[in-house]
Image 1 (cartoon, rainbow, N blue to C red):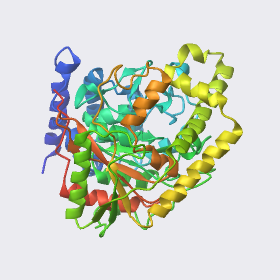
Image 2: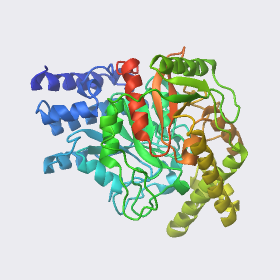
Image 3: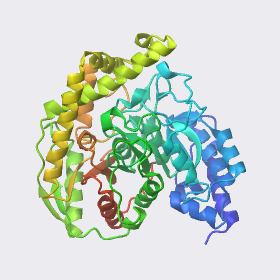
Image 4: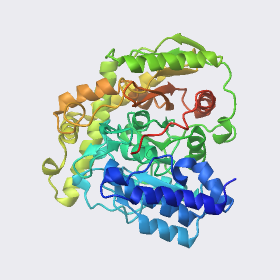
Length: 505
């Protein structure tokens, strides 16, 4: 067992190695060095509890690693180092994650008095009046927030590029995307800055970056995690908050610490019997798994992704599950129209209200894709919004019926490994229609869980021939994250990914 001196020495050695040199590449050290990369969040909390390391030493190590690696990967939107150190000095709550460093995504998650810019020049300098309920729960669990992570403008794209912060780069290959919109969170975790970080998901924005960066990412059921105060839902219920993590057990324990109906919420997912963490070690039983390789849209799938998905199906069969090819049927044209109606109208309303309040000209400050959503949103009527909501409810009924015959759906998380950054793929500078086609082709599997409110998770089960992560998605019944955690725990034990790290060099 490591002594306190040895534990701290390991962290210091990692930070010192990263701090040498003059360029971002030279400063970076192997991600396997250092305390923060050797333990998951529960493991770090256990070290604090056993007095092997102090919260002050952990936060200093995290800040040192962030400072060393952010110039290369660009995952920090704001730094809150002084706030973090003051919180530690004042004394932390005795929660399950006491002393563990944490990063908040800079999108609709607020800390009173701190910047809340949403990756947008249109919100540059905006400061939150109140803290989000989720922030209060995170801090009550003992986490120490030391910064906020990057996101594309308003979280609208599956790549984390914006004109306020610049491009966020993938630790597995800095020329490639981290995915979006929680790309900053995923890059920080994949780079070994911390073992878990806050993320949000309105169309795949937890699962897409998890897949791109080789992490575990679970989108909870609609209403599981608080989003208020002020607004207790985002994009008409499409959006959910949780985390990207390296371990399944961290995801479950974080959900235990944050879940539950908040005051004023119009809905809340049913709770499990016992904790989510307790589910991770339980056997899931013999599950009926529907294998879906071809997307609902019928768009092309990279051969490596298709093979990785079938390999995951074979793994599930070897674990005693019954797998057969099957998929529910949806009117994808109607769902696509509904998503633009809900998201476009929501974005247009927010932009219009801020323009009136500040006098800022959105046409001069918004990025082309965001401006496209605003223009579409202005065209929709209240009846369009109502019809869109009805379309989502019909899809949820269809999904619920399908999942009476199957326990989960197994499919790719993305249709391809992480794409290169730049104009040829998902750059925010391309026109709206071109971007829409490219984004839909890259991420055709994830949005259905947002439309229907289901929980879904991405597992880092494969690597492409080019050494980039491939995520495999499992979608479960509404309110049944417990089953997904049991399955994920079983798969993690059978095909562990803990030792797989991005080649920080």
